[in-house]
Amino acid sequence: MTVKLIVDASFLLECIQRKIDIVEKLEERLNSKVKLVILKPVYDEILRLSTGSNRKSHYARLAIQLLNRIEADLVDVNGKEPVDTLIEQYACKFKIPVATNDLNLRKRLTQSGIPVLYVRGLSKIDVDHGEYLGMVKGLRDQQYR
Image (tube, rainbow, N blue to C red; front, side, top):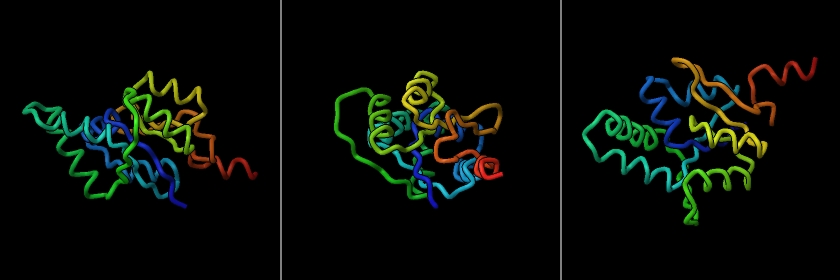
């Protein structure tokens, strides 16, 4: 089974900065194949960040290369709402977990019952509300004992 996972700019840039192999770590954490989903406004945000000459711009350019290499699903969403609101609405509508390091978005998603993955420490990916769909590695085994 492949798990679709929405990613936001904060998660992507944090993983790039810490040299985390995003797909490998997510698949290891979820014990499943993953397909990254990126909303068009998030992609546009990363494109805007990539135009500068500072370190964050460099990470944004690497994020764009990564998204192209792994063939992430780019989803065009309608709405003038802030990007975080669009992510929350899409995740709730389609019941898709989200990878973000944005604390406010994490809280909103968790309150809505959406699992949230985030970078913790130097290279660990953790899950809030991961019992949804048995997403945490080993959880399925524990349930059937």
